Length: 279
Image (cartoon, rainbow, N blue to C red):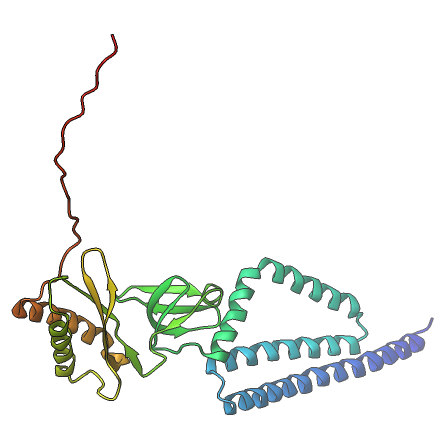
């Protein structure tokens, strides 16, 4: 083989693979640009649909990563590299990662559900996942709660969606349910009148809602009445605490007793029974 043949062969392969390399590079550059464009359009549509920003950004990153993997495989295929085994390896790796991150994927799915369906929002007082507190942050994998004693508790989203969710802030109004026990010797009409005056005197109690004051139970040691006024949700605890204290002090003034649990013991006098021992 002379130098002319070698040179011709080198030029041939350089031209062949050079063109393939240029095409592969063009596929990568254009594909990357199209991927960014696709992600931008998708995120814009999701934003217009008023989907949470956290989910929009997360979905955009996932979509971009998948599109980029597809572009890289297409570019490698243009270079003549066998990509079938590469795809199989990527699929196997994805399966292995998925199996090892089952809990994380469960939290991810739950986070998407929370963000999409919005059972609660930041600032709501919620009972979920065995925790009661104010929601401070909602992320893809976890939700942050601040408890009444100012502790920060981070709960996995999977644990939240696995049980019941009680959102105390979801409605603008809440009903206070109080149970008040009085003595069997007290005048029930007077008791109900006193309770009605206490409720009427509190301006935070909604006047357009019916207030229930009724006997609910004849208990062992007391006659129990329920007091059920309506208030704005943000006033719930303050009104509840104030009502409880006002009822106690007013009952003391009015001579209405709040009995404690007690038992009546009846002693019956009788003759002692003697037992004769057998001889």
